[in-house]
Length: 371
Image 1 (spheres, rainbow, N blue to C red):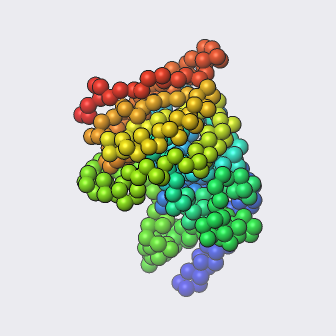
Image 2: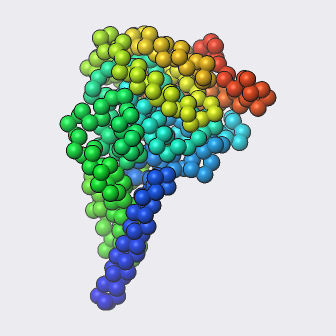
Image 3: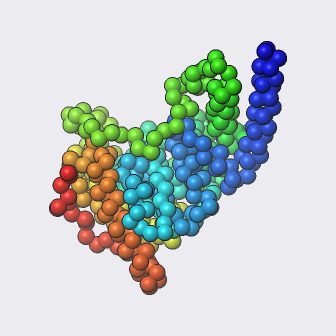
């Protein structure tokens, strides 16, 4: 019996090393390397964005990619959008992030893979144009670095090496296969778990193969539930994070970061679509503080993109906190944006001069009571 068991283990190891060799060869190909991230594990921003990029490899020219932070991830339903816009696939690659730097990082990733999309949807809030060095993503812990190369790293408008993590970031790019090492490691450990549970009765729990709780458990598409947070708790968070302090707004770095993000996004799509996102009334002051910077960037690109002002679309009952939508809000916003995109693509087919549909007036919230 032990011989059979040992033979099975040996076979598994041989198969594992063969599979790992294939994965390493795949990692050496710049564009195809993103397929490594087709296997979903627990949420990390870089692998999550890479997974959704990988899903578009075969049909990016017929697809719309939703980028941005957690408000984008929670704000749009790809399946609902596909029902509203014929012959178009939608991929929600929204991750998480502090300020506009996350948009620039994601735009740099698209520049790295050089894919072209039917549309790129950029969900944006004026309050995101604040300056705080802690809001800039750590490229190693978020694993955004796995989706970049040295050129994109060097071209970022902010200094990703100024966070005290210089050696780790540089090692990611200078050591062969290092930037994909974490994903390769997860794939191998998950494969060993699968083999063990399939072949042996004394199966170990998944946690035995994980570096932290639920590391290998696939994340869900949306993270938040419809239970709203306590209003006082949300207000206290906003105060502690200094969002009500006008001094963190009006600075140049977040403006430059958003400007560069939109410029890069525009290179990789037929239709650049910026959605001014709805927020609860708790963010009225922060949005007011960030509006001058937001308006400056938007004015530069208005003739080059579709601009949809949905800032007044939803009442507070559609939010679980100050900015993340519940399922009802997500359905409402997806319906409005989907209808506008359908019109945009119809106009574009009829007349190339009408490719840039602009929603001149904000979408109002009347007749949008939640039920």
